Length: 272
Image (cartoon, rainbow, N blue to C red; front, side, top):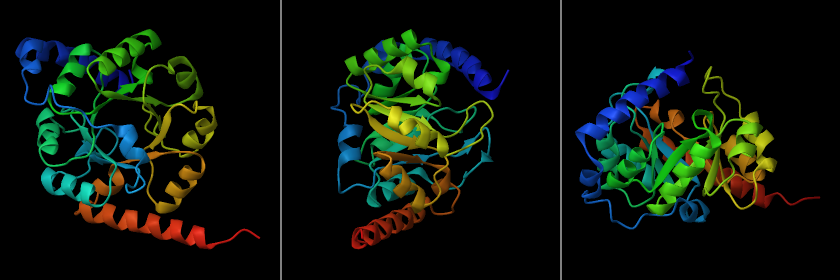
């Protein structure tokens, strides 16, 4: 059993326990449940934003503790100030050190879309996402049958949430193109955690034009952002590159500045 299988097995147990502890009716009574959600699509296309979905992540199964010291308010407010288009918040506790209250806290601080980064396998988790202030949910093709994924996507849209569909290869893409808003190509193999930007490059042309494209994982420099933009990517999910620093907010500020500088330089170079 690989790490992804272990995560899903533990997630099934966790979800059933949460259903008993906090019924759907209680989730629907949340102060956030009836709020008008923000559109990830709109913010990714906003020319005043960077296209970066900046992630708050304390640890991961492959890296262990990434940053267990920084405070969420400082990080997420810094992400927003630096021009992040959205913020991804890990809510899995066992493997990623996150909690639902992290997203709730972020929602009270920032005014850009929040992605609930979670291994979603049940409609309950989608209701939960809406109740804690998420605007977008993640559905991972690698852990869901195509028919099941479609039903979860439909339910999320019914609740007013946008959907980021995560794929890792061509077959997952072909099997799962449905009513989602954004398709994310995860450059990290969830079974062995190896990373290659080539995954995004190879799948870019295969993603139908009606979807926005996001490249996820393994993005460590401004040059990679430029290359991905040239392949039609609208968004870039980056977590570890920022979170491994003592001051993630300062790191993203410098990162965005490098992107702007490179883009300005490219515009000055006229073709012969």
